Length: 581
Image 1 (tube, rainbow, N blue to C red):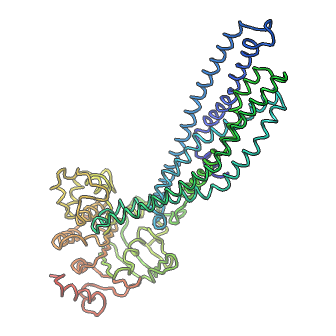
Image 2 (cartoon, one colour):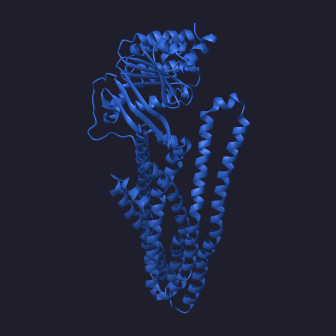
Image 3 (tube, one colour):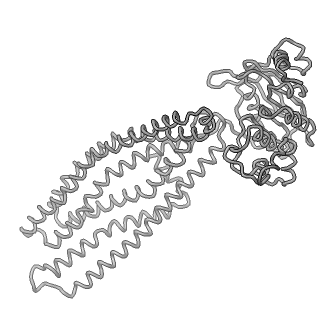
């Protein structure tokens, strides 16, 4: 089965020790025979010999010592065996988790568009823990069950074939019950796992959007939604467990019937002299070992079905490959880009919808371009094409004269600084967030870019630049978060700076200061600024207006303001409501 082969591949570097662990399982399983066989000798040779003359009192102590020695040896090997398997399980989970996390970092935006955060977290936690459990425990139990059953079966057959065959009559019944259960339970486990994923996604969305929930006083509504998801998961668990309980009594009764068979048949065989009292005692001691593998079959099949449901989801994530990758022979450079950008008949089609159509635009190095348009016109998507967050589906996009797909992704993105309206700040210090793109940045430079971004409010914080920013910037206003994000984008001294409505949450005075600072940077960069305020766009060298994914207007502020298009209408509207001074 592929999932088991996949687990074996991820045991690389630990396989020899895992095989050693399997050998230890085999040893301990075979050693299960030791104590019942020694007990048989004690009974037949010391406690109940055929005759008093054959009683060997002097063998009692050696046999007891041998029993103790075997017990200690088996316990010691068992201890090392458990450690070996547990380490293997932890190693597999760690290796897979690390690989998946690295793989997720390489995924493009479409991957995160189609996968819920809660579902991804479920795969990296609960599903992966099931893989660890099977590697560390279920495999060990399965091998132990097979070897123990085979060893006891051989011993029973060598002792008395008829007795053994009589006991084996119960096995087909137990096997049929277990197989029937296994075949029908898999869809239930798949449904249970899906309900867990939905519940985790609901919780993640609620926690991430807690401000919106509180702003609209929808706590009770969200509680109701979560309770429904929680109940669905609860019901899925109950269905699975109740289904198991339908089969468990039959398996347990069949196993217990074997104990009764040993007592009845064994007693008769002793009475007729077919077996000795010691052999009956050995049979009684080993009957549990004989029947337990069949009893375990249900649990093992249960675990295997859960493993298959979970492993399928983890493997899907493990082998997911990004669509945006480096081409063979792509350009890798440590030199700073010039910032020349050329859109040549560029189009973007996502899921059959043409969102950008025939974009033609050449941006010279150091030029400032403002992009304006109504909601849904494609402004953000157009900006996302430059760092290849999405790939164009038509035309050619060039950076410094080279098609964008010919650039190494790291080289390309290292030269681009981005700050968006929807700001994400990490749970780190303010200093750490600003210096995120260059961890070696000096404190002096961090403060310099904070000043350019009008983020001087940082000095008023209790711990200044060492203040820990809460998750997603909790505790900061929208404008404060935007200014820290702008400082973070500037701090890498990018050749291309993309600002997507970055100053939408700041006041006019602060925006004016930021615009002045951006006009007088101590390094050259091409600036693309998505904005809706005329106070921002009028400073640009050129203004591009997008409508329905196409460029409808392009020119300077003065040229477009004199026209009758979208930009002129926005100018008149903002002037009428006092938007411009």
